[in-house]
Every structure is written in C-alpha cells, then in structure tokens.
Length: 275
Image (cartoon, rainbow, N blue to C red; front, top):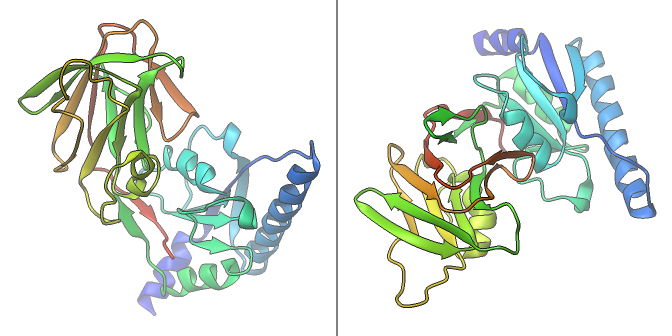
C-alpha cells in the first residue's frame, strides 16, 4: 500500500514526449495513423486515471522539469532523445509504429500501455537502471549522456577517419571508417552489426570497436574491447572534418584535427521501465 501511494505521487505529473509525423506518402500515412491513434488513446487513458500531463514534440524538447514520469510515444529514437534530458526522471517508452519500428527501448505498445501504466501506479512495475556514457571534447563535457552509443568518424561518410586512439597504456595511430563506443544496452545495435559483442543489459561496462580498419603494413592492436566502467578512452583527431555523434545523428559535435575526445562511463544511469 505504501508503494502504491508513493507511485501515485510520482505520477501526479507526466510529460508525454512524442515524435512528429507527416503524411507525405502512402507508407508514411499508414505509420502516422497508428502513431496518432496511440497518442490519442494515451491522452484519454491519462485523463481517465486522473493524471495531470503535458505533451511536447521531441523536436521541441529542451528540458524536463517537475515530471514524475516521462512517457515517450514513437520508437527508439524518441526514447534516446528524451533520455538526454533525464537525470533522475524515469522513462516509459511506448512503441507506436507497430511493425514499422524496432522499439528495443519501448516497454509498451498501444495494446499493452493501459495495463503497464496501471501496474506502475500500483507499484507492480519498477524501472531498471541502464548505464550511460559521457563524452568530453578538449576537456569540455557534452550535455548529452549516451544511452545507446557514440560514434567518432569523418563528417563525410565516404572519407577516411584519421586519428590516434588511446586505451590505457596502449596508443595507436589509425585509419578506418570510425570508432564505435557502446553501452551495454547499445551493444545489440550498431556495435553488434559491426562485429562487436553483446553485453548483459544491466552491465556498467563499455565497449569500443573500430569500423573497417585500414591496416596497410600490419594489423592494428587496439581495435576492439570491453572495459570496466571507470575506464577512459581517448581519441585525438587527425582530420579536418571529424565529428562525434551521440545516439544517432540527432546530436553531432565537431572534432577537427587536434581535438581530444574522451569517452567514459557517466555514473548516471537512466531509470527505464522495461518489458
């Protein structure tokens, strides 16, 4: 009973963060119809439960204040962007595009969201903690913490990435297509596709993986690894148009020649309601 009251207090104010959609073609219209139906049903559900809420497009999101819960409506991209503004506020992801999206970080769907939210209110569902990465360029921390992954690469996709990678006492000049840095939660995505390892979901370790290393004279030694949470990896850019991408393409920062990029565990896990 105490847990139930506590959770009800947390749900006195909810922020709904949704993906904006368009109806530019037939395929998009089908997805939009599913998405908008999910969003409207969520609004009615929250009203019926007596829960006060605000709604904001993920494109317009700048900060999260005074919310006991963030509910995202969309797919993984919406969850990832919203996570950049969450410190202690938990997230519930609702997958609204049906078969049209993956929804790895989404615990609920249009069909299951009512039961899931009622379970949160009753204290039957509790969030898990997913560990994140922090990035600094020349000692200046970036605002976003990465829930999924970080990519260091040339801004021009077809161009070679040139850099020095430093992992512990190992240091190596390299050419490649870039370097992935992944959380445990993100290890099932791009890093896995590139050939990396899948880590246990709740692990606080981080993984790095060099994409398509260009080994001319001899194999590189620092191409992949799984490191403890307190480890740091440094990249010194040797290219004019280097970039850092956090959780996809929505957050991009320049890392031109001479820039030192440091990636490490953030020690600020995200509270996420899971399946």
